Image (cartoon, rainbow, N blue to C red; front, side, top):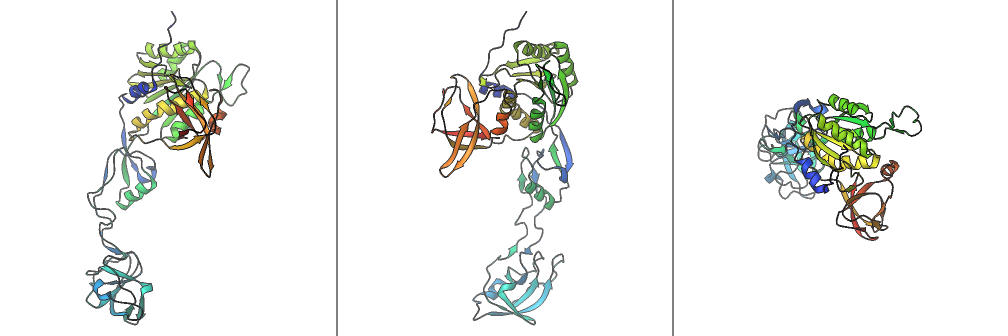
Length: 406
C-alpha cells in the first residue's frame, strides 16, 4: 500500500518543532590554542585584577600631579629625580613631594604617584627635570583592575570564542577552557542515480554534489561530519546506512527527489523504531523535507536537488546545529537594498530567492537569480537570498528588501 504524501506545514511550525527537539551537549576542556570559534560551556569570571598592579602607559616620569600644576614651556616646574623603575621590576620606592621617578612603559607605578609625565614634556637636567606642561590625575596610568576587575563576568556560557576573547583568557592565565564538544554529524547520500565525483557519470546519473556542499557548510559552523556512503533506492540499504549512523548526534540523508524514494526514507526511519515529526514544509525550494527522531537523535531527509538541499540546511538544519553546539542563537547576517526588478512568487508558500548585491552611490541594488533548484552554480553566483513570505505574491521593482547574506 502506497503512503500518501504528508500534509505540508508552515515553516514557522517546522522551526518550532525543530527547536523544541531535546538534545544533550557534551563538554570538554581544551587548550587555549585549540579554542578559537568554540562555544563556551561555562561563564568566564575573572579570578584576579588585570592589571594586577598599576603601571605606566608611557616612558617618562612618575609624579604627584600637584607638583606639575601651572607648568608651561616658559615657566616649567622643576622636580628632582630620585630613582628609576623599569618594566619587569617590582617598585620599592615612593614619590616624595617635589620629586619624580623615571619610569618605562609597562613598569609598576611607584607608591604615591598619581600621574606620569611623558618624556616629550620633560627636559632632563642631570638629576632634575623641567616639566613643560601639567598632568592630570591618572594621566598615562593603567590602574590595578582598570582593564578587568576580580569577580567580573567577561563571557557568557553559549557564546563563541573570538581571538580577542582568547586574549582575555591568556591575560587571566587560562590555558584550559571549558567548551561544548563539536557535534558529530552523519551524512548519507541516497539514490541509484548518484555516482562519486572521481568517475565520469554514466548516462542518466549525476555526481554527488550534496555530500560536499552540506558537509562543508556544517564544518564551517563548527560541526564534525562523516560521510557514511551512498544508499541505493531500497529500504534495506537505507536502513543499513541509518544503522551505521546510530552513534552520531544528528543524521542527514540527502536525496529522495521522487515520491517513491521519499517513502523509502520515511519507512526506513519508522521500521527502525523512529518517528516522523513532519514531512513537507510550505517552502520553495525544499518542500519535501523530512524531520524525525531516531534513537532520540534528530534525523533529516533532505531534498536531492542541490539548491533545495542547501536552503533546507540553512533554514532548518543550522538552527538545530546551534542548539547541539550549545551556542546562543546568533542573528543572521542581513542587509537591506532596493530590488532591480519584480520578484513574482506563489501565494501561500514561503519562497527563497537567490540574489546578487551591487553597491551604488545610492545604496545597494538587489538582483534576483531566477534558477531551477538543480542549478548549483546559482548558489556560487549569489551573495545571499531574500525571503518572500507565505502571505505575499512577490515584491515589486524598487521595493526595499532584506537580504540574508551567505
